[in-house]
Length: 185
Image: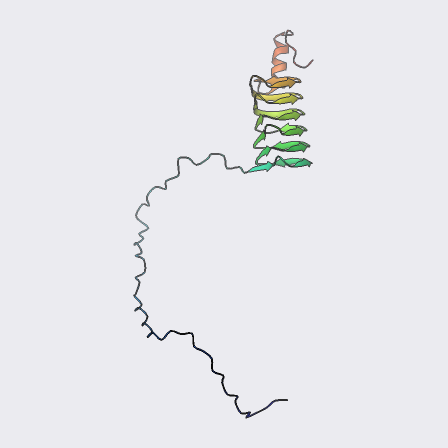
């Protein structure tokens, strides 16, 4: 039910918290000029674009398996992978693979560059470059364009490095009658 023309209730005395000081007038608003716009003439040559000298050539992103993780599966992609924890499965990347000190990888590897400071149980099937640091442990076969082994690294397996395409190198050795070095057996 609605009440129309009801008498208004008297207002209670509410203390005022406002100071008895006169109010200051607001400062005048100044006009701000818009930024100057340079004239654009399509016939003028634009200045050469400068690129930073430290810009990386390689723009692939890096994925990290942290030291407190254990993962089982398969890694494939175009980026870089850094393993600081434990991974069980194959790694096939177009970028670089780094196995940190204390990390362990059980599986096959295909990557552009492989750096091992931890432990790898599996074959490095194809890499342009492999670096085994002084704390590295490799149990498996290795096939790479170049190999660097630091003093203290441990390797158990078959190594083919520096041949480019290893199959073609074996065929060339067979044609030349070289039987003194057989890497396959």
